[in-house]
Image 1 (cartoon, rainbow, N blue to C red):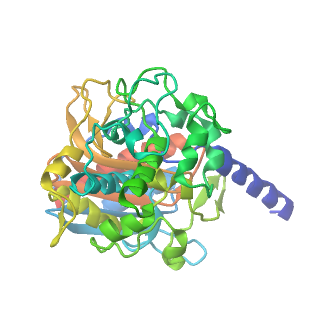
Image 2 (image 1 turned 60 degrees about the horizontal axis):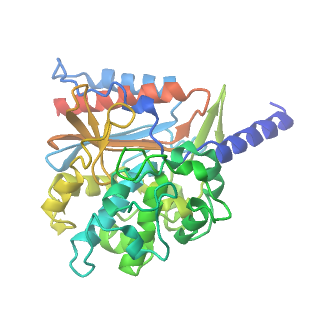
Length: 409
């Protein structure tokens, strides 16, 4: 292919990379048709299972996939497919590093809830967060209604920034979290009016990345540590998450899955980067092995091996729908505290966890409601915007296959 055409293709992808809102926003289609199927054949043929996974990868233009199944608080199965680095022909493993998008919100919620249960900090979930900030944080349309920690954690704060494409220009910003004031208030130089709903805080669920950026800022204000330092000291190190960080320079790049964008007939490598300002809502780099430690702690009353990161009552609260009177978001998603709970047509919860989607990285971490069977998978390519529907259809099918696999183990 002529060099000129290659350059044009590369520029086209870079433009997509900047202007598509690829912070972790769950599209409607990822919430449709999730089912946990009981396998009719308990001796599911491994070759057939692998063939189905590879066929879905081919269909959705997925270059590599790393997956695992957790049962009885133990990883009982894992496998890597494809190439995490096409040039080096690296097959992914549970130690291959991916950016996991909105699953980062589970980290942010865990950190905030650790502070909440620590009597030294003495705050309540229904406190006005403005008490802990250097500015009065209110929806400009409802200046008399307080915004609380609970509202932010449960996507009930009346922020709905995922509708705003304008916010993507701040994706790699080196501004600190206090810069939110410039984005979310009318007197700010970069005010984003459409990030605020025309209904009051607490009235409706609406997924918000900015809510979790603000929670990252609150963690810093309350703890006196940087967001990264707090997470390293109180979550990653205790849980032996040795290859996990919000800072790309802390990651072994040889083990980092290369981000690819698929255009018709070609995969184009995209530069890796830090999300910085967006870290608390979507910027975590981690591995299947590492994130499984956090997931097991959440499924096991706050305990991983002999490490106790949180009280059982706090874990239970995080996994409980906080605003049952609100309509399900996008049809069948409800929210605990930093936790996504998918409900059936009768509004009964049946899986819980979180999803994460970026332009070149995708992740899923879900369990049945009893925590008996849990699955995690990451992959490293995107096909925005042309083949997006293929990816989300593949997500549903891959998730179901992994839950079927869990039933057979």
